[in-house]
Image (cartoon, rainbow, N blue to C red; front, side, top):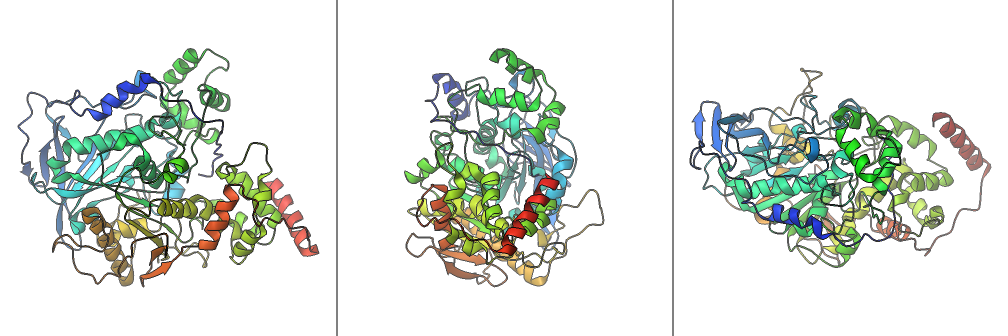
Length: 613
């Protein structure tokens, strides 16, 4: 998971080419080849066949199944592996998604579709530690599927819809890792969870109509188009859609809010541990540069071919070839393309809300505690406790692409002692500062920029009771909020396929916390306010009032077993990191004093680092 992820910066991107206009027509015209087959029944109520249920969609009929949420014995209808776009195979590789063709008969939708191409074994340890299990190992480029969980098949119900985008750094993960049945049943909403293309197959391109950048995000838009055309068949209301995501999914949410291509496709947004600047965007002036660099690092095709021949070579390569080179390549980031992303996200945020929608967002209080670093966590903790020089070096080495300095500048000189003083009070200063750089600061900045519209900010602080392998000082790690939001204590959370006896055990306090978080989230999905219940279907849990975020008092909610309100989340750290990343020299003073202990420690660090590297 700790792969080398390079970000290439150049000057501002050129204006969008008129040749991309065809895709604008495609995504804004749901009536393009989406007609239902002649032999499909009229759209209406589904056919209930015991535990199976058959529903109609624009493209044809689907067979799903009926299940229950264990604790409340509440009924949920589940449709899995539902195609929302044409398989991007052959000549369609690297292209924007196209509408799926209609089918005849009844299509089976009772099991998950394939995961988008990725290295499953490499990512398994990471997801299992959250825990999010891959229910199978099937990968394919035919992966543009979504899953639907709904408490009703009444097409007139018009329930609010939660549209969830999975995380995984834009190079791993799958919608199949998540189960929306508790959110759907206990929250009385429709839950949609999607796949989208990843890594080079989702983000490598040249910026023209045949190989646009950001096709992974265009997949997400295509899935949102599917929701607009079809969700009423599952009891959902296309005029009450909330997009949500965690980690890279949270980043995706923020960019979808900023994109002009998504107007009218959703009405609220939730970002968990991810925001627009979590992965800074690429900016290219030479359109073939990313392709040439990919070929150079992957060795998949000969170098120095004409661009058309290079692209033909990449289209003819196998899916397995792409998966094999993932550890050597770094094509998992958004691109300022003038189309999906018309300008740099920071510029778009500064210019004010692009969409006047309610926003709920937040972080865990220890984003880089253990899960993201994995097997390297012990090393990073050990080498950085006392050596400021090494902390500076690691910040620049790991996240220098977050700095907004001119090329060739020594970035370490912008890391002030005042900032390091704050983090030296932590047991793992480097992990804490890096977690705040990539998660906390972008999230707080987004809340500040969007404060003119209803914004609700949180910090999740509870350490799950099942985490026995982490150091004691780590509380809520990256992803620790997910199972509580999805209501995992109220049903058998998807099992570990490698250990069929595996089961999570929640305490009663954790069950209560999960029920409150589920209520906050579904209240927001229905009403735009996490405090406000829509009907009597949402229980009165005596929820702590969640204050609206403002630039003046910057109130946020601390989500722990005892929920409370606080103000100005990590205010001093956020301010100093913002100064650092914008290359402000205010308050910067490098250490010039060295003790014998510090010098010896840093020498030991260097020896260890060189030996491990």
